[in-house]
Image (cartoon, rainbow over all chains, first blue to last red; front, side, top):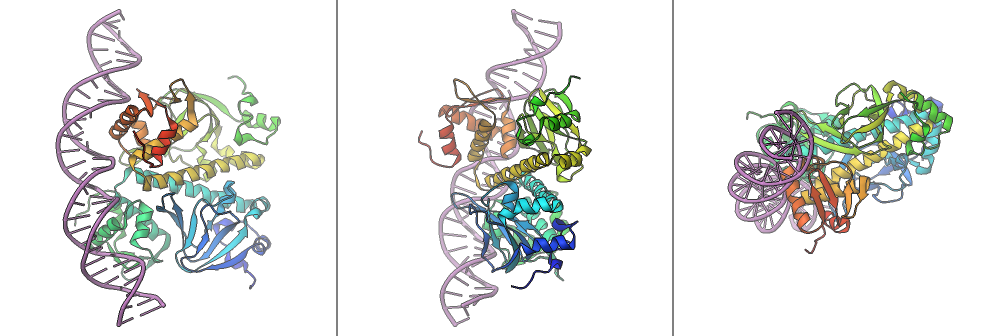
Length: 234
Length: 234
DNA sequence: CGCGCATTTGATGCCCGTCAACCTACGTGG
DNA sequence: CCACGTAGGTTGACGGGCATCAAATGCGCG
């Protein structure tokens, strides 16, 4: 396995304020892994042996209920931490992580967490900041699910994905990984049928363009108006 | 104002591992406040001037949407921190906190947070642990809202309250502060009407007893079965 | 080129939100 | 101490938003 170069992780928020020497020490402890599309990085309920940093690709974090229903908790983008159960004092992963495309991740043994956090306070701080951000996002989603109609929730979900991973194309802003109607349904607490109907309706209004596992937002502004529940002429 | 005794906070998870001298130093920086029922401890969007520890009483944390709908994010019990926006790098509170009964709280100036966290690592750790716990709770609620029917969500909400603040009475386990149908509706993303219908139905089945701003769970086990979606004979 | 998965689209029905009315307990003040 | 006002609660009627059931269509990969 080739040596990991510190340029891979320098500049990431989590590693801000660390010296090149520190970065090298941290990297020495990490393994780099390739995860093929649809493979899992870690499994819900599984022993939290490691925590991870996504270097390249997109990962969806999924919670499965006892009766088999799935909820997509979030999508992870390059540069983000995942599987940080150890930082929360857990010994088991609360969700599964599945590669939405072929991915490259760094993995650290979980029992290294206290060590790393102790030696590199800025790393600990960065991690906790991530946790704090996710708490706020999760609570925002609770509010959304509790107060909004399906149409608004789906619109918000798309806008979030666009902001997080949008890639500009000539047709609009494309969500930069394969995403199915089912996936969108699992993000918003609805069914693929309803998502399909919404997308075709929006396509007729010129708000989006979509295809097989592909969504492009053509008019983010009008979609946002819809997400906010404001009426939309047309 | 009388001196604050360290016995008030010794033994709380957040202050575990701190010496009596440390506790005294932390307490010296705190003010003790009485908050009358229905008064707010802090306001959503307001400047995060302080963070708080609830010594006595019960506080509900409420998020209000732009169009005025309210969602109860959580209830705070004695010994818990609240308003820890600063620990998340926020300068403004993401929600409001309202006293459900007359309360006593400790308040620290928010700009003291980095100082305290630096001087007392176990305090910082305890706080982050709280944040981590709340993240997991929030994500569990997302799953609930996305997958369960109203009846199951309300049942789960009651069981959570019972576990958190239940007081044993001869009739069953009483939720130990005034809570209205509207409150329960705002915890579960439904309406007071639906909550009312559910409670009367459950009362007829002998699962609960309820009155004005008062709910007693008579048969937690059967209510749990209902919450899990298992059929209930009777 | 054909099989499988993703998607579309229609029909049906029900959960639960909305609207409306009334009831009841509590506290307050005369 | 009772009368009354008000916030909280109950209950019925109605209908809409979506889930559910069902089936057809089409895109892509092997």
